[in-house]
Length: 336
Image (cartoon, rainbow, N blue to C red; front, side, top):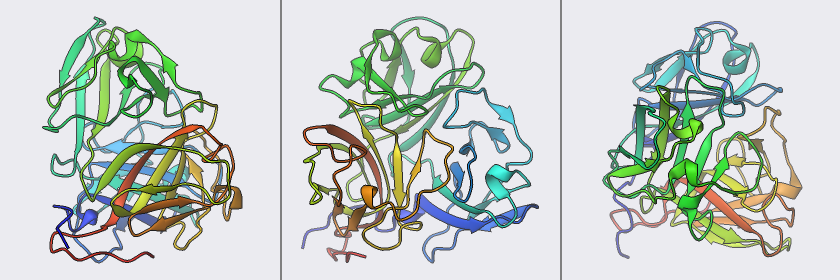
């Protein structure tokens, strides 16, 4: 069998970590048995109660908090994530990241062109058609841009959003349908060296500090695609080329949320443990109306709800691997 990936161990670049809060400084070590990873992005959500998501990255620095489900500005939160470790991270006393006896999930990425992930920090200038350099050496397929200093939304690009995705945008913090706006990406598609922003304050506000997260597909490790719902409990099968560790789905044409599944919170099929990027809600457990299977080479929808399977509707997804379908030695993986 032919080799299918150059990334045999996806945990070198992406990890899902569950932990229980202690209420005091808490050094979390990744509990998988594969490669150690010092994360560059840590996105944390308390599962057991209503509370906001929190996102930290190594470019802005530990303690610099952004909240994915809100439009609030960046702040310094010494009670949140305080350090990026060589194989984990440290959280302090915040209820949103370490409430005593609370249950938490952290989704963690390592910045690497090999794995198709880059973090770009720049200062806005308020002008249209501005090119910003990135280091992917590949065309980005998914981008999220956020002003650090203004009350603004998390403006999102997905290359399968519409037939001309550079003219449109979605908001990660909101459930709104896709919207056309030439001032967001200046109607310019990203390239292997730059992405383009318009004059909108959310992507290029004059003198504003702005952060952008960019991903490009890597065979056997990540995929950013779309599928069409069939409105049937025997829903679509979506081929990824790997067994997924993490999946986020959004209905592009309706007010549906950014729903997230992962292999740690939902450890068996059909998984229905849901969190939403745009919502502070606690985890919804065993949600049969949102159930799906993680398979050796993709995922399979198991219900007919508008959330992920309305007949004829378009859904975009973002997925990262637990294991490639076929590794570089030609060895296939199993379903879970």
